[in-house]
Length: 394
Image (cartoon, rainbow, N blue to C red):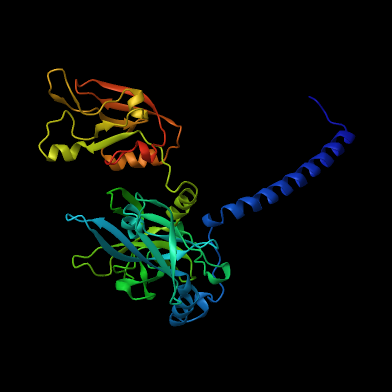
């Protein structure tokens, strides 16, 4: 056994202390840099002006949260343009809410609030409660999570930033406050509790949004995109949907968790969209086809309707619906599993791909029209906008 002398032990101790000090300094230095860059992904302290909720009455807490953060809630007005049958242009108006999220004047809202204005080359304005309307610029949007970022130009001292909370640590029964502009009524405050967690809701493009927050705080048309706050004045959700046969609040509203927004916002700012790993296919649920009378060899899975030319699936040899030599239609390949995990429908595929990164290679098991089962390796890529077709793609 090799033994150390006393001198060697002392030398090692001295070198270790220097190394430890250097490591601490580096961690501190880069840790500060990471914290600065990722401040949007950490839970902020309570804003100044809001007392510890346990030390004041519920009424006083409501007053303090509203007084402190209402100036940071945006009233968004949109104008869209559509050609009519007679060749003229029809103007449409819309409105919603949003939250100022940084000193650069960026405002977080729902994608559906600004969607028509963006698609038709319309315009957007933002009011922050001072009677003035400011033109807004579109930064980026993600239909899959129903989130978007727009931007206004104002001096930093004129902006009230709504701080991010943490939606991972919420509990049912916790008090929440919603500030928005329902029916155009500027900066309306409603209060309630978290009624449920991990509720699955769907964006307008039918993509599943998992983990939504259910609340009984009144949410009405115009509240969309506005903040759902905790009692310390931190943003925990983005109010997005209501469940109502009559179109008004019946105490069942849903908010997109803020932690989803934390993941999405950096990409919206950098790329204008969210870059996700995709197979490059237009999928159709097998179950839905069977319900419509189709005769298929299996009861679950997703059939490939078409593949993106040059995309990952096409490169790997997967096929969509085709015509054979006699002119008859043959069904597309039916995906059964990805990396050994069963795929029953589009939602399953979305969950599986959401856990992967661009550039990952996955094993796709599929059933071809001749009833042969095969497995192929597919390298996931990001299908850019100019490669997409009007149908949904994964």
